[in-house]
Amino acid sequence: MKIPHRPLSPHLQVYNLPLTALLSISHRITGVSLTLGIVLLTLWVFSAALGEEEYNLFSLFLNFWLGKLVLFGFSVALFYHLCNGIRHLFWDIGMNFDLKKTMLADYTVLFSSIILTILVWFFALRDLI
Amino acid sequence: MIDGSSQFRSHLRHARGMGSAKEGTHHWLAQRVTALALLPLTFWLVFSLVTLSLEGHLEFITWLSSPISGTLMILFLLVSFHHGQLGIQVVVEDYISNITIRRTLLIVTKFISYLLATLGIVSVLRIIFESL
Image 1 (spheres, rainbow over the protein chains, first blue to last red):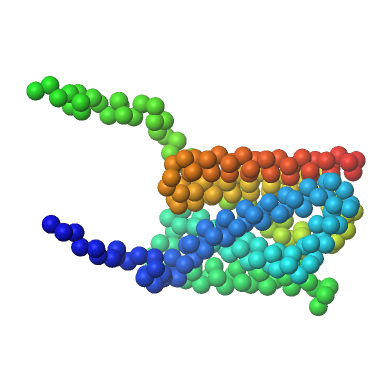
Image 2 (tube, chains in turn brown, orange):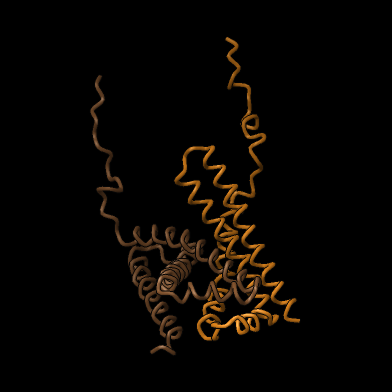
């Protein structure tokens, strides 16, 4: 008997991911990128331990627009991963499993991570404003 | 008639050498406990970086050499790298099916994580002791 070549059913390319699934994969992506963030933090502390010159060189990069953009990216990833992580901890103790609460948590996570990011950058750049 | 390959062997035969039970949730639990520890540590770090003026080297050194900041920074580095490598491990196990590449990546991840964590911790200690 010939086996027909049928496409696999719902696959990632043709499957319209619901918001919860998008947030789930974002948790992974932000998590992996945040490990690069702590590498940057480590190098920053390391540069300070080396001396003033090295520290200033590192700060120069961070204050450059590209450095600021990188820091902004990390702050978004951090607050998203933090807020969604709290939601995961609630799941882990068996709370918020029904669809309504899950969807409410979706929007709460998105909203609070945006607010936290804006808040932090408002305070970080308060001298410039 | 004697086809004893499976019939007379208990499941123990296959279980031996595969590691004991009772510890299966260790990775999962460690990820959650480190996440819990990182909540206050992250808020402290972000709050410090935003409110303190850390532009100059002297300000940074003064801030980090205080016993509380030093302790919290060392804890943050240690716990965040531990949490990070646990997370990377799951991602590697999920997406890399080639067993050689997978095992290599897992070991490399752990080596780099603890190398960098130690580098950060030693740097904090040096800043603390140099400022004494």
